[in-house]
Image 1 (cartoon, rainbow, N blue to C red):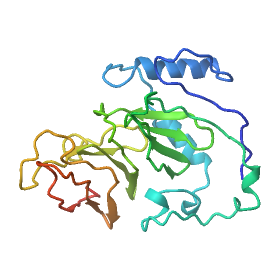
Image 2 (cartoon, rainbow, N blue to C red):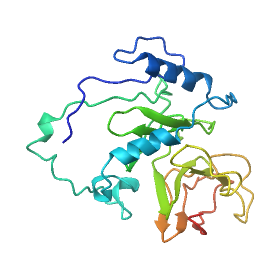
Image 3 (cartoon, rainbow, N blue to C red):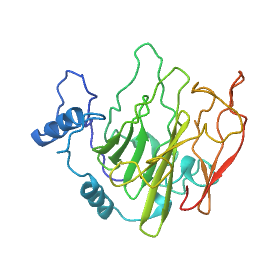
Length: 256
């Protein structure tokens, strides 16, 4: 097991007033840029995160079986890792290596994280309680990029995971938020505009019935399954009028 960093490197959400022990001036400046250049601010000076992501990838030995590149571990979703260094005898020796504060938690208990993160080429992909999607250096916990879809969050809202797809040099990260399926560039965290409507697919369309604007009618909580270059999409079915008819949909052509 790699040597851990005792303690925590924390990136606090916007609006937090606290000291951040161990954070350099460069780190503080980066945190301020994240706050000031957030979703909808139109800040054109935000640096391209792709070089930082590429640096993390180049520093990691590329062993897919040592990572977590699929939802729940592999395409069979078996919750299994072949790694053996952490076992019944060694688990008691684990220490905190880093802590990342995703933000967005409701003190009253109205939010939740059910997301099973991916780790691909040394980069961890996860989501906050408010469906803000982020990429971290898996070794340090440092944020590489963040994407906020501006989701309407309710008590029952959750996204449980994401899908990583690649073919040659092309890569995509797919994840669901309410009735939408997003495709992001893993290097930059930007929507892939060639996918659906500028990177977002509305799953309420072409269902054969009008489900209206009620986002409970069509909800993608569990990520799609991959078969070859097909995305197989289900969804949670509401028990009330106007619900998703329960169709299973497949999207092809470069995984969507």
